[in-house]
Length: 192
Ligand SMILES: Cc1cc2nc3c(=O)[nH]c(=O)nc-3n(C[C@H](O)[C@H](O)[C@H](O)COP(=O)(O)O)c2cc1C
Image 1 (tube, helix red, strand yellow):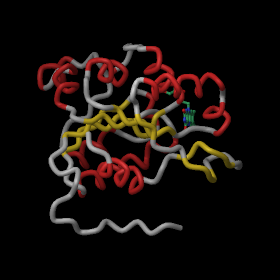
Image 2 (cartoon, helix red, strand yellow; image 1 turned 30 degrees about the horizontal axis):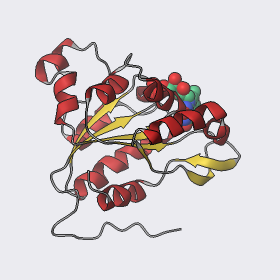
Image 3 (cartoon, protein in one colour; image 1 turned 90 degrees about the vertical axis):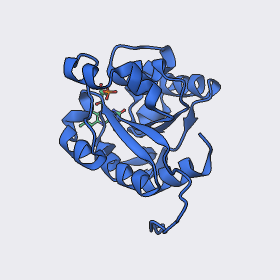
């Protein structure tokens, strides 16, 4: 297994970058908690948005505690809209990172849907979008998903992974979320 130390860097490449981490509803949502920490360790300011389905896998309290900011899950939150409206949040982001990204969210983004918080934020933002997919290997290999990925790539959306290997089901193939340290290394290596 590859080592994953967090090297000490006095001038980390993600320093002060405002990253909006969008967490979708898949098993790998728990890895996004580690990703928050590692992005912060790399110097980034991180805010987290989740789909409603993501909260079935990991609670908002985890991300709220790690990020130090409220975690939004819905467009329809009057208090949150008063504090930082979704348009302001979309403007705040210098980068949007969707990890884990579900097949569902990839489809929504490819087709320009805006019927939940994350798809709306992505449409309302000019920030570069990076997608780290995680799903069953058949979902990933399905022509519908591959067509959606091609559409997003043609618009400049960057994909990190998926990796190949063992997943939650007793089978393996391409579909695993990249490890959080690999995502941070890839983000640090490319300018926003
Ligand atoms: C136990 C369980 C695990 C799931 N894991 C994944 C997954 O890893 N990737 C994926 O794309 N969908 C997965 N799904 C299906 C998504 O949760 C479903 O498509 C959902 O609508 C996604 O919502 P979201 O894109 O709004 O987060 C899973 C569903 C269940 C019940």
